[in-house]
Amino acid sequence: MNETLRIIAKRYSCRAFTDQAPTDSQLTTVAEAAAAAPSGVNRQPWRVIVVRDRGLMAELEAEAMAVLSAQEDRATYDRMMQRGGKLFYNAPAMMVLPLDGAAGGSKLDCGILCQTAVLAAESLGLNTLICGLAGLAFAGDKAEYFKERLGFPQGYEFGIAILLGHSAADGAPHQPDASKISYIG
Image (cartoon, rainbow, N blue to C red):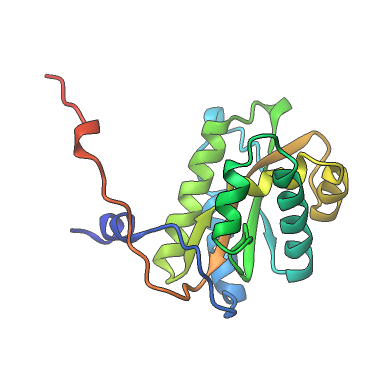
């Protein structure tokens, strides 16, 4: 198995991070790899925002949990509370990836950007969690406040977030379901 396939096979969603922060060099490398991702018509309709400010991360997490707790369907909130009431699992850093919808930014572009970033992080010995629930912080009363704090350009909306750090516990990748693969011809 080559190195790329090994990285893909071993990556898992980390839900327990240590306090050890990624180095500036690691964060720069992951951000630059993310920015090198392909996009439709090469529009590159995104920004890559690296967040190391744990206070800001705590504010984002608290707002997202507040929005989650106010939802009528409490299943996700209850699940997060069973996991310790943390959306960010004490991650020491995160990337927020906003998209410019006016420039044709799509969820597909965001997904490609995100996957490129997490595989780059894994190749550097970092663990990650793709965190869509971070978007709840941009769905509540503080949405504009957080966009401003994070420096979203005008017209950009939350795309996805990636938590980055070092795992506090061993994790295992999910087992691929071969029944979902078919071959024609």
